[in-house]
Length: 102
Image 1 (tube, one colour):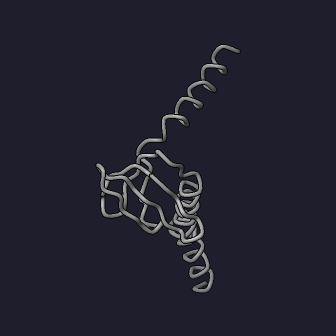
Image 2: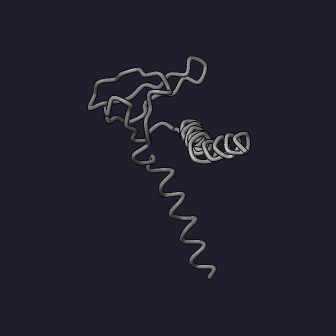
């Protein structure tokens, strides 16, 4: 009986804690892969800047913070607050095409 309880407890812990964390890590990794020059980002230190350069070999990103260029580790990017204008306009065009076809 106690063995069944331990197995159920482990399964519950997996689905409530470990699995959501893995999904969040995969989502963050995908966000970093889609990062482009011109994207507005926020670092883990809550510094806001615009992506100027991405070096995939060294896994670094250069941010333009009001004329001051800083280099961060790619994993220091916490979130993308605004996509670059080219990306946003292409997404808007796709949405317009979808609504016109309906």
